[in-house]
Image (cartoon, rainbow over the protein chains, first blue to last red):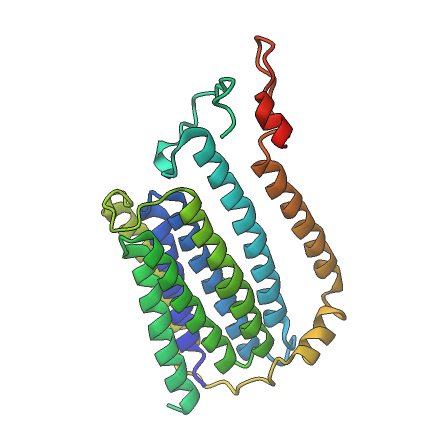
Length: 112
Length: 183
């Protein structure tokens, strides 16, 4: 097996993820692009298992499992933030979030 | 060029093509479904590379749970069903950085590994992976379980509006009365 094939696939997937994060405005699409990047890293880990099998057996696959768990936690918290932002401001576009303005919660509008 | 190489090339083409459609599609829901295609092809790559357990966990957690969660979020934010033209920012900075990172990493890795042939490792079955996780990697395993619990609590706190809401200055309750009763 030529190890360079999955490595190059992973590099291209990572590039696609970076492109998606920078290109997309919708926060959910940004999260999808982040998932692509995490999967590229997982593919690197699993392929590294092939090229360094003697030094640490299955270490890359174990790390890939850990990254999958991290990704699940990340997407859970990320979607909670996106949904709360949508509930408060009715926006899902990441470049409409006002970072400099302090959030003014008006009573009645603050929830839902 | 062996059977494994041919499978890797085919599945990799599907994965990269699906990923490209995720980042250029103008339909939100279709982007999520292309993500399923891409992640499924990556699970196939794991199978070819001998990481059997990781492949099935990928199908269960990513294709099964994460994509469904993303599609739920698409519906909950009342995203447009059809094609929408306001999903994207200007292309050229993203193209420059993304293309630079992707092609740069590809050239770097291709130069590092050339066309060398590696034997496929032993199959990463659940038994062997379990020996490794609960032998060598038991401390990270425990730490990651604490992290999952923290993420769970954090997601619940974030999505409950009545926890941690600041009381407004005029003395009105932070949560309106019917809201409070519902909670």
